[in-house]
Length: 276
Image (cartoon, rainbow, N blue to C red; front, side):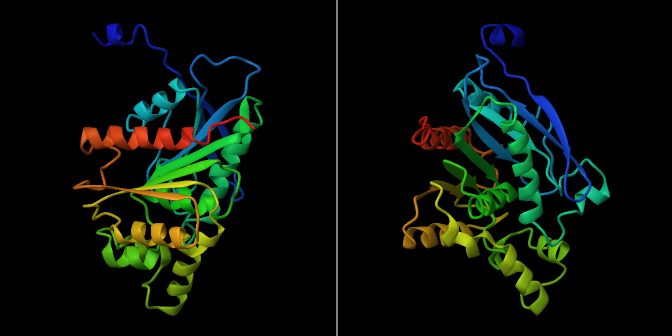
């Protein structure tokens, strides 16, 4: 039955790459070429980031397969990787993002992007980036430190780490990753340094923020803080709050809201998907 449903569909399969990062760790990444790929043509590329941060992607990642194939069917390449701090590669790899959620992992994500671009089929004027939860954090960190992306979308993200400590139901991640609490001077300085909200002035990439009303994993306040900050700064930002949605809004939540999130993200990216 499954074969019959897919026999008239074109599935794009991932190709694997690896590199050694600045800590001497081997990082795996995968890229999916657009459906009906033609050699010699240039295509937009969407960078997908996983949450966790102690999570991992794989060649046939079940949680994201639909989203990957949807964008590939629309003519996008899709890139995804397991930056430092991902699970599945041993304790040293897992703990290599302690007190470093932003610069190190973003370097791994962007190196995977550079490696993919070097193949020659990516239109570097049409780069997009997205992710949820920790990946919402890293998406925001990246666009506040790198100006190469045409548009970005974050979902259910962490944007201010002190606020995350106060309202997130996984607040113990703060002492686990940063070694202390927001009122301690050393930890306070690290949390300020590592919070994407504090770099909002540098965000010029058109940005779509999505959050659920009942997201107790990360809390809702941070998404409002980021949106309001960017609006006051006159930045190109849009904000969507899904009523009643939990942290599972883009994975195992209400199917209508999951479809809405995917189509909203695609529509937002398409506004900026013109060749230059």
